[in-house]
Length: 282
Length: 278
Image (cartoon, rainbow over all chains, first blue to last red; front, top):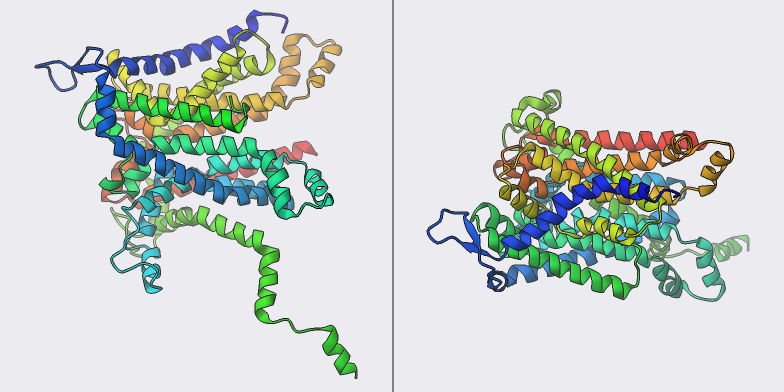
């Protein structure tokens, strides 16, 4: 601490790296987003014309996929929260000496490649899997209903794939709660529900905020679940960006879409962190 | 008389009520069993189908075999892709752990101008969707006429792993008792000795955890890799492209193998920690 230069020397290499390969690319992306096709040029040749209407065109053309990305990501986040909260609570307070074992078990499935697991879901929910015939036998779904290639499958896949990002921060903040505060609440005649609402939930809010962000952000930009488990009718904005890049070689539109997605997420995140009142993450 | 008393003291509870009571008491256990079943279904599926005698397309169960496990390189593309993933993962882990740990020490141990800006710069890559990170980096490489491939992929992985390393190591540094370092100084250790003999060993588990995290993030990454790897095939990329025509069962062998390997590493780490704590 005596030397003023030490922290800057420690930061220098890492930040130089981040500046070159994170900040510069984002600036470059902004530049690309206002380019237009060179008239008479080859595929993939663009020139800077500062055409900000690219953003408008890109958004109007893909507003459906934008909407879908945010709605799917929101539903998946809420489902993951609903599944993870009781799980994290049980591991923190009800698992006794098996706490560490159970925590490892939560993360363990994610050591198998996430693509393999997503494809496994596709087979399990598919026509040859065991879920569809079972549900048909019991008459829960009709003969013509399928589970794959639906928005249900996409949202389910996203919920599953991002679950540890929700469970781990939730566990971390619930585990930090002193059980004596819960006892005190009971001693003061609060019933289980009131204790949860007035003591447990507020104390676990940092975990809820961190978990929902860590789930929502990757979910909104995801395209793998939609590509594997969905159909052309469940395309998300990630699928559009990917195909603009690789199939259509339309860099400006892809850049404009990427930038819009990033800006939308940053605005949402800022508002959300302000409302939730935790600055712990940043 | 005595029979009557016995009847009175042990009232017979109807079966449904008894079930309800058991259910009420064990609700949380029932929930945990269901949640873990949900978590493990695809893993169990992947593991089971690694024994499938399926040939090229591993979609329908065709009979049990151990051949896939005996010869995981039976589908040569799989092993090639795995080797690439491991190489990229190791390089990305080494660089991101070094750079990230240095940043974590700067932010966690020093007060300086621009500290909150530094925190923001670490947070931003985590708040940016992977597709934006991947696409923007590819645009940069294209501007500088660098072809996507092995090293661009390593650079991309280092870039998105750094933040996670910083956050993990910083948390460990924050949990250190500053009195331990003061004690070392009191015992006439100079700054460097204190760092090497006291601080570093105490932070080491955090650094090891961060390195494991970085490796698993890099190894499993698909979106950013897909943008920056060009013709280099990594394991997730192989699985994705093979998905349409069916994945060879050897991919399931490798997926399951990674699962057991990671589990073994985590358990070993826990055991070492416990022994040290004693």
